[in-house]
Length: 176
Image (cartoon, rainbow, N blue to C red; front, side, top):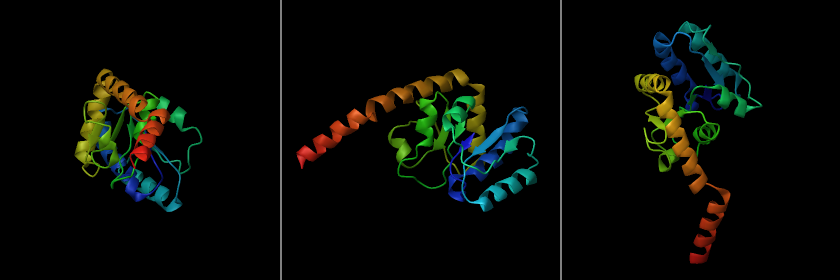
């Protein structure tokens, strides 16, 4: 599943392009583009799916999912392929908390908590071959990616728990 608002910077087009390579090794694989937004982007992604002859393998509903937790839990892998840095993208963290491995950008705020191949899978989101190879790796190594997800879940609970964040803010405020 590729999760995020339907807009060009979220990288759904790169997910679709990479998927055209992935299905060569995993012909039964399916890709869901889970996100709502501008209809013109949904139409663009659908036309890309048609151009790459993936209509029977890629779904672009074009509406925001009301139960994203179920989507994460049903997926074998979550793609968060934002093309530009985000302040703090939630998709990889949400996916990990649902027990689903993810692939995310190797730049931006995510690298403060995620180390590639240690507690997550990071890629240059604009490199289609790299994205495809990481997806293939993840699908071929579910036990290893499950260990990575467990490591990140522990990190999230240790560093991003609301009480930890409140304590850190209190320390900062007191130091001022």
